[in-house]
Image (cartoon, rainbow, N blue to C red; front, top):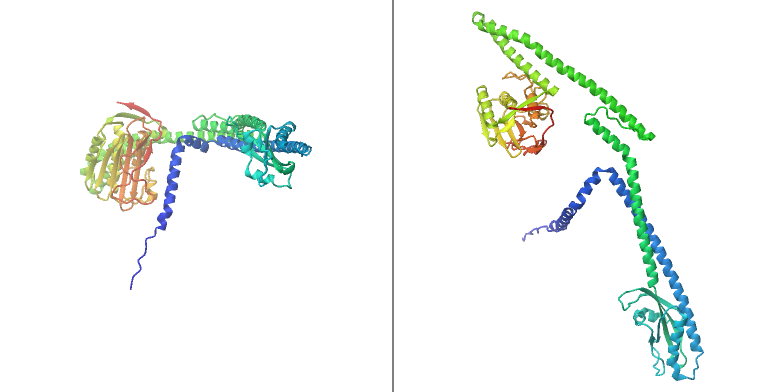
Length: 574
């Protein structure tokens, strides 16, 4: 049996071609109008005053346009109707005078018909307001050698008589026919006009003649042009006046809003005494009073929080300092006990060893608390010096390698050029990150990567340990936070290492970030700008490692643009 073969469906491709063409046309239009409409569109989206003025101007302009068109149309129709009625009356009067002259002609004088036709044209010119007269014998009549030939006072009238008007002139039931025409003058102008046709009955065998009288409406066109110019000038003046009025009213109406925005901006800038002035309006004055009451309340709350924060910082600092004296005594006693531990029982030796370890941890905790209190008080001083981060990382890794069960590999892809940083604080960041990798790396290899670009330098610490859940990643830099509270600390950390590391990165204008996934390990990335003038930068290292597949909710693999955080610090230089 023959088998049927399905044909490819070309309907979809046929439908997509117009869509592609339309999309390209739209992109071309956007590309052409972007330099002109782009700033206006951005201003339109940001300014309520501009939107109000523009919409008001457009509505007012549309109303003025409709009114102007209506007025101009009414005047034009009235002038045209008036001139048409005058032309019809004038033509009827001239036609009657011409027909009376023809009726009074001596019919026995057959050779004088040509003279009669000439006399009729003169009579029409004398009794009519127009000098454009065209007299011709109607078509379809038997030839007559004595019948006068056609006569016309102007060629432009003869050219303006159309076939429709000629046919209408044959209608005996209607005495007059008219038609709007455009005359072709010798100077090339084309004034409008009206041609009125009627019938004259000549004596004898001459038969019927068509009489066309043309009326030039150039003066009417000049009048309409003058009215149009007047309306345009009036409309432009009204639009300018309304625009100025709308601008003034908008400034008056939006003044309280600008005052509120300026006051809130000053409050945000630290001017606690900034208040919104009175606007001499009951509604806006209520807004001003409510805004000022809110500012007073916020100032009082901020003052209370400042006092509490200052008291807390002073308490932590004082307690840390006060604990140093008894801690020093305890440490000296511990050292004395350790010196004579050989004379003690095994259980007592273990107690002395634990005591020494906990004293060292207590001293480390006090140091971290003092450092955190300095950050909270904003009394951090950076001692910057040109530092080679590759050498610094090698030093840190060499010092921590004996504590790791596996190899810690350093991959310097870049970053050899010195950068001005506080070497002590950067060394502390790297030590915390590598120590954290050793703590949670489950004995797996650890890779420390350094790379740089024109704007930034980055250090990433990657481990293949237990990893963290997404909800744990959000709290990894919190103080004293642990992902697994039951997990034993290998290196005896204080719980403040990552919090201090984040603060150390921030005072340098850098960013400390983390990616982690359960069962696939973690990746901490430190990115530092190369100078104070750099406000935004791209990290040279990815946050999501190249050996894993990104999932929904993961940050961008390339890292994206970063902005340096603002910190109030004192910066020194060695």
